Image (cartoon, rainbow, N blue to C red; front, side, top):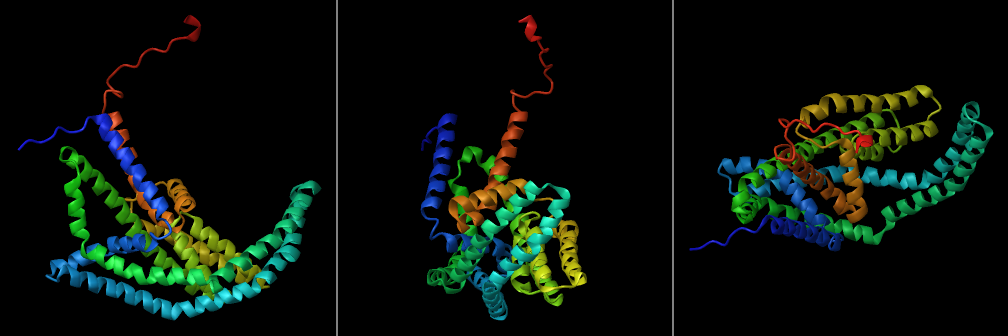
Length: 370
């Protein structure tokens, strides 16, 4: 039996480039219906180690998958039953209070900022700031009310939510049941000549994703509970939706704490006349951020995530702009793959003949001598 010769290097590069472009184009064309499939695959990836442990205890793979997903769906359903009514009530209340908040910002907070700007800057800057706030306050109010109206009354949005919630568990089950088989099949398709390098890169990518997705998901859950409970104890309005939002955004470096802090302080300044209670709200976020950054994230995520915070933020912004919510979910895996490939290519370059520390560099030539 004869084997065909491997493709020349330029044709190999062209093949992988065309394949990558084709996958990106396919995701862009199908971005409107891929969300439950991406969510299902993500859930299967997170739950695969638990299904493997049950399988090692002689539980059939389908049974292990059903048991793990049953626990996940049951826990999610319990949380929705307990928390969803509170969230809906707070969103409805926020929709009613939005004009009041905008009016407060325009007539009370703006004069304070004006007095501060008068002390720091000149009258020209104060006039520009006043004109900007006056011109955009109405637009912001209209946008907030429109957005909340769509959230509460959007029939299409409700239909999409039902579609995602109904299809995601089913997709997750089949992905989780066949996860090891799919990995083995994809491995069998890889070129045998480079299988060692491919497996090494796949291990690096999996290590980063496991550290980020599984570890960071736990961090987000912990701080969504912490911020919601702490702000509710402090008596802040909309504590649940602010706390959950800040907890979810924790996976974006610094953005979760900053967004939650700003939103909480705005609500606190409007709600409370006591600076002590406003200070308590600030302390809640300061303590949460310090514990998250110095204890929880290093403990649960560790040093395996070799992704720079700026690279993560850029990837999330680019994925959201190109593919919407589906792109946001795919952004971190794509960033991990690109990061691993770039580090591998840099290592290959440093080990190649193009870069050699043992070669004496050529002496610099004065341009005037040319």
